Length: 250
Image (cartoon, rainbow, N blue to C red; front, side):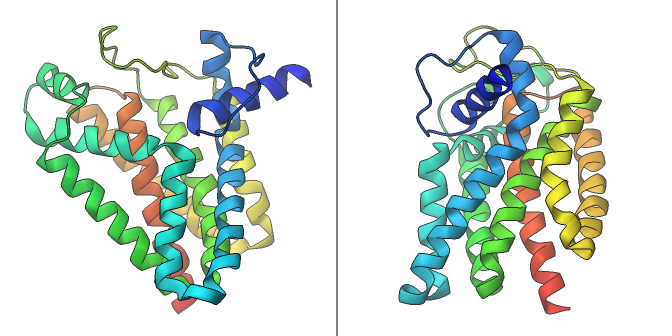
């Protein structure tokens, strides 16, 4: 249990800016194994954001509250996934050769493609949360957990694209065990058994999304990087919020 607790803390420190104890065990092997708890971290983040929504929405309304929640999400995660989305958009949109794409992605400067991708991501989530209204807290919970599980599952079907040591200062999860991915998916989807229609819709559409991204990433780079996983999380989150809104409308 102590080992699992340290893995969860490592996942929490990796994906968020939430402080973790200084004595949390770190090793490259532990970092790769902690991906099993990425969706649990998502549930925690989603719970915090849902709680903020419930406190703020009666005072400011859905539109302003959506912006407050998005700002809080950026603060809690340090814009971790948004950074991956921007780097991915710049790299894949700004070059044709694989090596050049990787070189652009590891550049800390943001370009036109990355800026446009960030703006569209934030606008989509703002409008979707505003339209969801009272259903937004549950949608935030679901999207935060399931999107991280879906992006993590990409590591099963793709090899890691190694980049040189100067690419990123932060360590990366470069390989995964199928059991860890299964645990991550189980933690994300198991609570949804209380909403069978939601579970079925997210499982089906999420599976198609993962297969599509796998094919696209394999064609573009031959594998995945941390930036590509961050971009996948953003795409999955927007997709899941859209599915929740579609179910609400239906």
